[in-house]
Image (cartoon, rainbow, N blue to C red; front, side, top):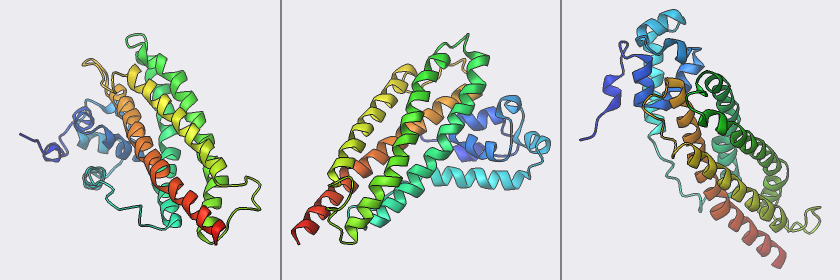
Length: 245
């Protein structure tokens, strides 16, 4: 029997239970300045009073967030223009990374010193995530500054013969190699965290950290699929057609 978790979402739900039901609600609490760790045993009403948040406003945002995160992306990107797909990747995935990567670093900096003695994995995660973050930030910058403008130019009729990169196949090959590196990085995170499953004695922020890493893993998987399996092959085919015209 499935449980509608939003039925337990009211002003008397404790912060701890609210997060345990749906850890990604932490995004909304953080937006309003709620200290999840310090407030975890408090009912939502008390936390709202402490941080000067209107309870009905916060409840509305939490319910909206629950609904939005449960809605899958069903658009067929094989039929969209390259420009529309690139805009979607920028707005959906690159923008998400710019929010998520520093957020995860901040959560790690909070949790590891406090609970790392009891859960050594919190310290073990640090170098793996830091390396992945650095790679992803450099990767997205190269896509935005080099590859995506080339693909947009191809859609507008360019054959890239005068490009300093030559064929678009060259930066695509590099991006695919970096995607493989990102896959390896999240695989290490998965292994270290037992597939993002916290132990029973994990604190609320420990759970938020593991869920944030899980969310990042999910986003990277979809992000890479849209590029490797849709954007890149279509860009290569269009460049070839332009060169044959």
